Image (cartoon, rainbow, N blue to C red):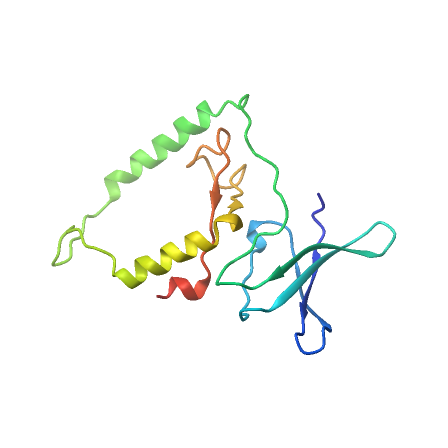
Length: 165
């Protein structure tokens, strides 16, 4: 696995010419979004040792999605001892509860239902993107709020425009 940037090309459907886009950098922190349309085709390439290029992935836009590239190694480490980190985090989070100011709306904490169209949009996005889930990068930098040392933590990144619904 390489952490070198990948070259991204959009393939013009009118003439098949490849139009270079900004490089794709390695890692979750380098996630970026771009607007496109159904049927658009993209090619990702990496540089080979001899200076040539090899196709890493091809993608045709079929629905609204964010597509992770490559395989990420598992972070599971059963030998890892996180006892001190867990206790430290628990103490820090417990002390925060004293600073919470409860606020209520005129509805209080009443339960409500999501509008059917919003729920349907979320459900369709989840169904369409099941194969686009990505391994979230927790190890070392985001704390121990999830048990990433025992289970791989996957997520589906919702596109920005879908979050505005």
